[in-house]
Length: 282
Image (cartoon, rainbow, N blue to C red):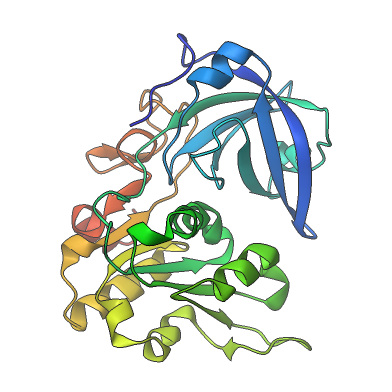
């Protein structure tokens, strides 16, 4: 796990918005840069970790880091406006300031995945935590095998990261497949569930490391289908979501069985959470 650049993990550092990119009508990516040089020098993160973003007099929310760890001075967060804090964050513009605590949590097993194929499966804005996986492998192409991305959305307007997907789809040994539950005038890909895309990928893609983020019913359905197809459970990883309010496992809001999503996750081996995911309402 990356070390925190602040001596007080409860005290937000100040970050400046250096760019704001609209991904969809209610989704933006904020590119942040810590204002203090010593904090910038100390800040490091891994793909799959998250920060707590604080908006003065409004509140704080956990947001996944979607940029590349090789450039830790520029920290991207993709945010959907779904509540008081996120609605304020998406209105920020270049030069605005925001509080930042982190990075927190465990990241994707990128070292374990070296020299293997990667199957990345996402649903909705779940592509933000997994974007770091694809981007990481894309920038280190000689370290990984074929990368296959299956991305599902509810409706075409939810498809974000258009430029990134274009670059990834054009990259060597990379395949991107998309599914939407609803049709649209310009939708040219699969109409249905993301789980149905498994039948369209090459067999060797399913034989790699599997990393997923999205609605839990979708992740569980995909994981169980992969197990039925003979994939070992130790090759399947999920990024989980819960209400995280401290990022340190102290407040208890994100407790999930014996674990805390913020501290022990958000990335978990499927074997570790499989039983709990079968419990309705947990």
